[in-house]
Length: 216
Image 1: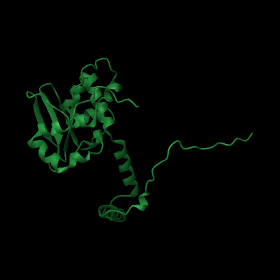
Image 2: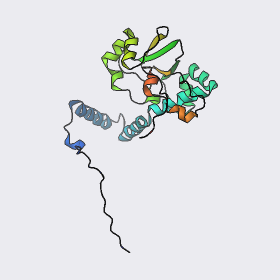
Image 3: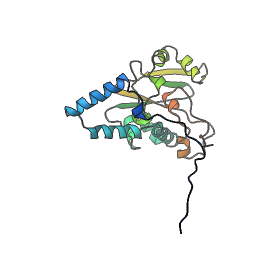
Image 4: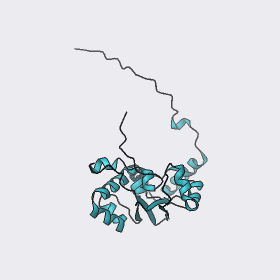
């Protein structure tokens, strides 16, 4: 038996230009030329680039959220995380390679925030790529001078008695903020707790969500 099926689009897709139709920028052309030159000289191969891109694609704040949630529910793991961040995240399958990860804990008396004043050093294995604002000169310069004002612009208002500590990342050492567990989450499972943890809360500019984000 033969049946005809009509394929109906419920909505129109806005036209999107193909990548090939968009003129390359100066820096895109420079990157391509340098990449091809290094491959030609045998510094690395196309396969090396593919593997590196796959690693970058696998890194996201979801991994950091799992680390934080584990620390919230497992006091022994939390102690190991604060003592040696690199070694502790490797327990969850997150390699830091040669980079030292220092985890700083928020408490009712202390709030930590991360910055890189020289460039954009960032704990990519646990947070993925840094947001544009983290790399901006405005954030890098103002966070060390007026951290409370910067936090307020992210909507984070802290009581006057809370000590704000700014941690400056380096090429060899990166920081991760362990935020405080939100009140009223005592009965939540670890996976649900991980959904409360945001990228910005692990940088220190915001606080964890009060509840998981649900799909509309």
